[in-house]
Image 1 (cartoon, rainbow, N blue to C red):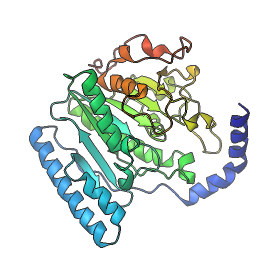
Image 2: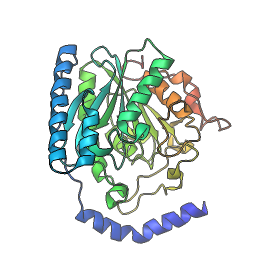
Image 3: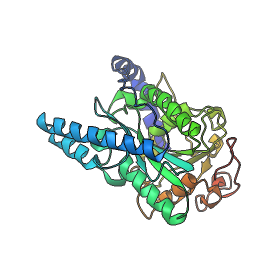
Image 4: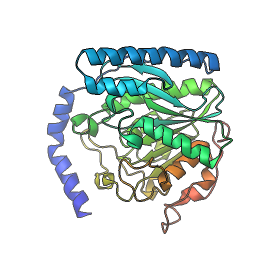
Length: 334
């Protein structure tokens, strides 16, 4: 508690300076996404081919310009299934794991700060691409017959961890607008969706949540959702929160002051989220194969809330994720 107080006091002391600095570095706009494809095998196959060729072309261009690291990262993405890709600026990338044409349910992973094309798949399961692959594999293990696709969604310019932007919701606001469009497209295609939001990505999901056509919103390693409570998100989705016992984010001050910070801790029972067991991992360990956090996230992705486990020894209020399967306003989770 003393450490949190010191952090909060320090944040308040520099708030005016950082807010001024942040104003000098407004969110960087990203290019418009590609038009959403029809969710048919033919249309998706055509998009995958187009984006694969685009990735190969951009990898060659990066190599010619001396950006060998980026060239290697882009080369590693060739042959994967992307429904959106743009290498300009920090880049956009939306990768599909699984058969989206036949899926009835889709889990969308929304990443946090320091995620760019260069890190999209370079840090194992700490990257959105690796996280999506791990989540899809765990879901197949738990329910081999499920018609689930997993999407790694880098649809916004994320802030750098060591930047004023990571303390404000400016970049998250742009991401939320793009995420609302994307989930709306999925819903119009007849797919039920769950959002899995990591770190700063939980701010994106919080800002996008109002009336969003999704059945579940799960945040892990969250600094806050820019909301006072789950009720103020104005969503019919099940709202989940998990945090590893070794995650440093637990020391973040859950305040909002002069535009800094993202409000109450979603792990606090008073927030009203369904708190689930995320094990003993750190901030980048939520999608580690074999972890309790990955298992619970897979059950959320599958729309099977009754199998999600609460924190051992927690109060009934904090561990309520074990209890009741509710029916979402868009027709249930399975």
